[in-house]
Length: 312
Image (tube, rainbow, N blue to C red; front, side, top):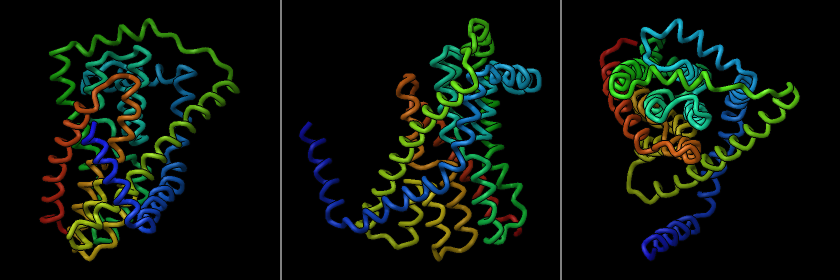
């Protein structure tokens, strides 16, 4: 207990030692949340909630099962989680998996397996922010980068699904879905409940982003160059970190390498956001982090080859 108290006191002292700088970092995190995350994420969150309350998620899961059952060895609900995770972006992948597990729609083994690969950067953010950066850095052909961001986790999920299907019979968790009945809510009640739930979730995410960004102040005490500090900041909080890397004096291929690697990892802020959704359901954040690091290492190797040898 004394050790924890000492750590907390050090944190307070560091923040108070440079309050203006801490305020600036926290403000940048809050600004990024309000301007980029809320408009990008909130519509997807509302649609997901409406689908769940109307039962449309079950129908989508069955459709995906017919198309992908020979590729992905997961239940219909699991395939729905993959779809939402890849197309809505983090932390929606973690939230969807957590909600499905809490509702007994998927078992714990399948939930943890899904978490390993379906909680990634959303395509809306990637297309709106990252692709223009790639173009400005001289990479007009962005397909290899799109594959690295989504193809590698997708392939990782296929392999992981086959392994865990043999060990835990994940494919049989569809029997859980037969006992599930969609809640019967009117459209007005559905919209109200969805808005309340998702607004609360977004406020929590904003708190994590602001809090994490404020602790960029610690990097100021490390005797690194500005370039290294900006790169390290991207592994704390990714939204502001990408812009920080882009403003460095690194070579264009080095900027792209670090941006893409940091995006694959997601940052400490993303881990904290994911943890907030997993805490209630009791799913393991350690298991998630282990596989996130493995995918990051694989992706980093891939992007090193791309940025070193691929013609612009």
